[in-house]
Length: 135
Ligand code: FES
Image (cartoon, rainbow, N blue to C red; front, side):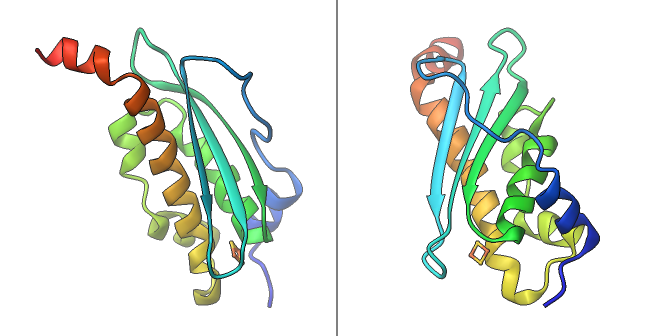
């Protein structure tokens, strides 16, 4: 099966690989696995507490080229977004951008799930402040 140029580009030059320092309170971490293939993706977002915007992101993916490309792409896409905007990123956008074939769609779903998990993690640990603001 042939990978698209964009997949190969992200695979060969992945953006934002790595992890943030442990204990950083502004970081949300999502860790998800694909039952279909056993691939695992860890995605982190770093939120600016003053603006509420995601200012940086990191990922580590143990998986296929499409999974690596999908996670690399979304770390670029989430930067500058609010948490809610990040939740609007759908796997269909990723699959379209990377021209993924049907058999590789689940790799982009993994990336969407990883963002959601990272945002959920961040929100769950900052729920108290959000409630305080809302109340
Ligand atoms: Fe499973 Fe790509 S083959 S994430």
